[in-house]
Length: 344
Image 1 (cartoon, helix red, strand yellow):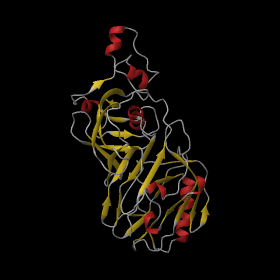
Image 2 (tube, helix red, strand yellow):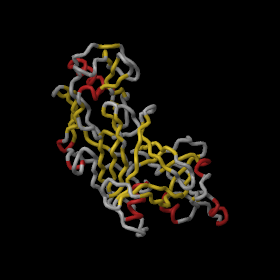
Image 3 (tube, helix red, strand yellow):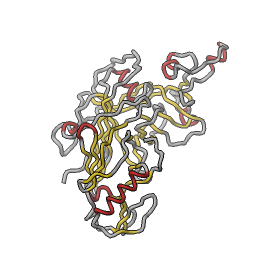
Image 4 (cartoon, one colour):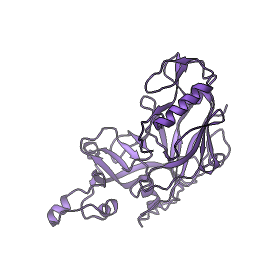
């Protein structure tokens, strides 16, 4: 059986691009590995910022901070440089930031982002490809605008929201790359784990055992344009066993932080009811945070779930792929109740 490839191609229109251009050498795209933290069910990217040792940064697809970490940790790098008030980088990063009028105080005041984090610059090394296919030729270090918070968590985050300060936007502008980003997330097929990648710039995307660009073999659905920079899609309907589940229409957010699919309460209840009605499996007591659990039998008897998306694409979740093993005897439907007023 061919391994499942979880692939997310995001064609982005980057706004507010700077005119800075680095033409040291021609290359097509950055390609950097993604790992999965099985304990937290989150995705991480290994990075060594400046002269610091390599750390795992949590991947936040909708995060507005380009790369955020603890300020005390960030300052340990020998190439750490605070971004000061009145500088070009400060004006670009946060045009609305108000600097002190006193010239002496102004040059010593650190610039802050729109969410009040401290701005600094440091080098970020990423693997790159010179031919646009899946080969990591070597690393390239780029001086980027980053953020940190006093007393912030020791494990930093890398945000990929479609904002003018995100790392993809900065790199696209700096190296005149195609304005495109793609995620191929790590996945597991039986006992084997497949690593993932973050792509910034040009594809094509080649992954064994496929012999052609994998982005050409998938259906697609358009992103909803949103000023927040979040990645939203339009789910037209949910089907179980070919029958529609009653849902409220609204934007659906693609998230790399939520370990399981989160649904508004009325949608969640309707999904669970229909899943119970179609599942040919023995019920088991619920195990938090799940509400629908069954005696484990390898997932046999679980109905197919289809998400019908805008543009005619269909996201099909086969039987056992919708279930989470909570122990040796119990599996649960991998959807959770997000309450009556979720943002998305």
